View 1: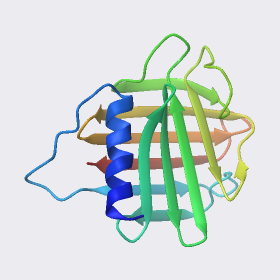
View 2: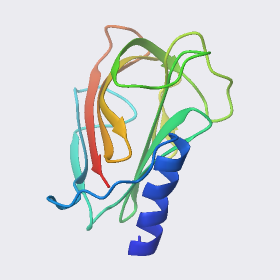
View 3: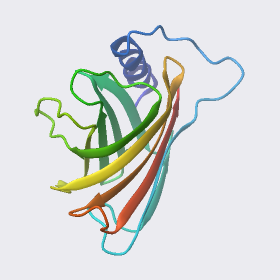
Length: 162
């Protein structure tokens, strides 16, 4: 992803959140996505560490959904997080997140959608925590179990600084 497109993605994220983009003068941008999956977890398996600029990482908000995209060679990953219907995402912990497809209306629970290589979890049980969500960036952690609340877990984290 070229620098201009990266700047547009960050600017779009800030605009979507109703925030102004404020450069961070004292630090280089941090853009990482990590996950570790227990045996049998889906759709993510094993573990991975993605970091820009070698990997393309984009974070933005659209229609109340926080979207995180990773492109690394032929591998891709998308994580989408949303607040329950009638709420907006903000820093805090969201428990009981369930599936929310890209065109689904907001459910009464928090929403989660994780897909990689066109595979996802049709019946996720997840929790996520947003530590930071503002014009300077995003810090998120999540735990997702597929098909049952006690199924194998995938634990991930996203750190994105503008």
